[in-house]
Amino acid sequence: MQASEVPRAVAAAMSTASSLGLRADDAIVLHDSNKLTLRLLPCDVLARVAPAAHQVAQFEVELAQRLAESGCPVAALEPRVEPRVHERDGFVVTLWTYHEPVTSREVSPADYAHALKRLHAGMRKLDVPTPHFTDRVEQAQQLVANRDRTPALADADRELLGDTLRSLRRVIGERGGAEQLLHGEPHPGNVLTTENGLLFIDLETCCRGPVEFDLAHAPEEVGEHYPGVDQDVLRECRILVLAMVTAWRWDRGDQFPDGRRLGTEWLGRIRAALDR
Image 1: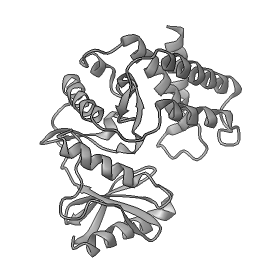
Image 2 (image 1 turned 180 degrees about the vertical axis):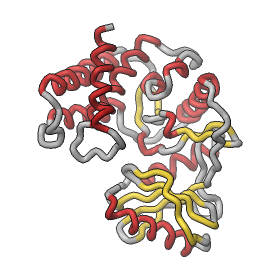
Image 3 (image 1 turned 60 degrees about the horizontal axis):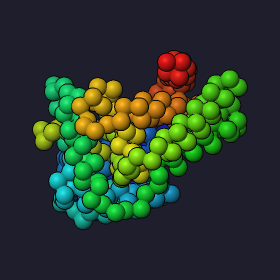
Image 4 (image 1 turned 90 degrees about the vertical axis):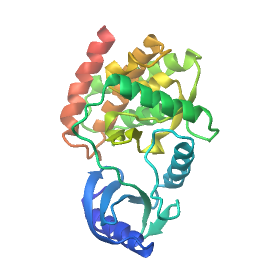
């Protein structure tokens, strides 16, 4: 979120909570990316705030509610208020249960894999319209092809990313394996370690595809503990996901900390992976 919008976004979250009977005298910024994540005090509620044009909030609320009701390991909505999207001052605000992180507990690959498998099992029972994973790959391809949006990307690197995204999107799509509803980005940043075990957050990236696409976002050791994985597809998905996140680091509007250095480093990793 643009720095100039943060104070307004914080005010929108606090006033929304207050209007619902939740006392919010203070707000702690926990995360700032395409949306702002806040801990409101003393009501101890997690608020997620995004520009009103961010229309996936309703989808995320409904999906989180259905998954939580079926016992899936996802963060729950705030139970003291109606589970819905609130609009205020040009922002959409959603309110969630705040979970105190358990920082002393190391997440084992086996526990990570087990939690993701439980999430996938619950998702298989849902029939909701979502994009295909190849739609997200196409977004990365369009970014790479747009020189105005990626002016600092060298020609050789642009060709590498474009070719990698195009070829792996085709190869993985043509394998014809089983596909289902996926989290979309179940990387460690979207996993909470809580007293109740691992919980997945940020469901706005949901898509359809093979489970290997989700596993490609997790640490490599996790894939070794997930039963029934096609290791060839997983290797291809890992390179594909790496190419996607590398492309986003070259977007001139990217605000990821140290993003350009990481983008350069990841280009080297892609070349090494393709050589292997």
